[in-house]
Length: 278
Ligand SMILES: [Zn+2]
Image 1 (tube, rainbow, N blue to C red):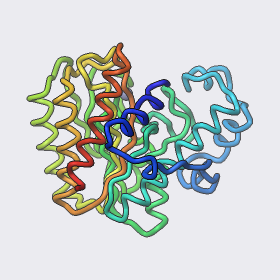
Image 2: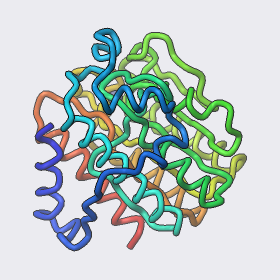
Image 3: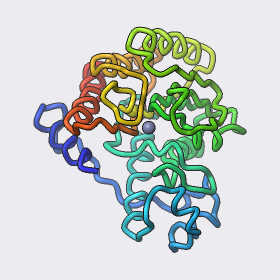
Image 4: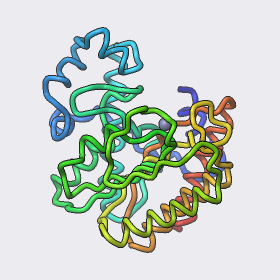
C-alpha cells in the first residue's frame, strides 16, 4: 500500500507532474457502478454482508473504509476515462482492479474500475473501447464482464502459469511462458497491438499497466527488466499517438521485494506518457 504515496511524491520530485495536475476524486455514484455490476452484490458489499467464503475470495477483511477507498479509486478511473476520451492521457495512481466480476470480488479487486469506466464512456456514446491489460495476471473479471458487448474489446497479455489458474476468455489472449524476457515479450506485444489497433479501430484505450511483469516481482514470472517494462509502456502510448486517440492508465499490480523498484517502474510509465504527449 505504501507504493501509492511514494509514487506521488516521486512524480512530483522528478518534475513529471505538478501538484496542480493532480485530481482528487470523490466516491463514485452507485449509478455508475450499476451499469456493469450486479445490484444485489453491490448492496451486500456496501453493507458488509459477504459470506466468509466471498470475503476470503476478495482477499480483504471487510470494512467501511475499504469500500469507501474502492469507490474513490473507481471514480478516479472513471474521471481518467473522460479525459482520455478527449484524446489526452490520464493516469490513475491506483486502480486496475481487473479480477473483480459483475457479482463477486476476487484477488484484491472488489469492483472493476476499467469496466466501469468503459460503461461510463459507452453511456456518452462511444462505440469502440479497447482494454489493454498487460498486468502479469490475466484480466479475468474484465474478460467476463465485457464478453457479450462487441463495443468493448478486451486484450490481455499475461503469464500462462500465473493466477488465475483457470483463465477466462478475452477477445484476445496472449499467454506467455515463465522467463519470457524483454525481446520476445516486446515482439509479441508489437504484433498484437498492431493487429488489434488496425482491426478494431478503438476510439480510446483503457490500459492496465501492472508492473508485476518485472524479473524482480515475487508473483510474476515473465522476467522483464525495468527498461523492458518502460519500452512496453512506450509501445502502447506510441500506438495511441499513431491512432490519434487518448488513453487512460490504471496502475495495477507490482510486488517486487524492494518497493523502490515498484515505484521506479510506475514512475517510468508516467515518464513514457509525458514523452509521448509533449
Ligand atoms: Zn497482477
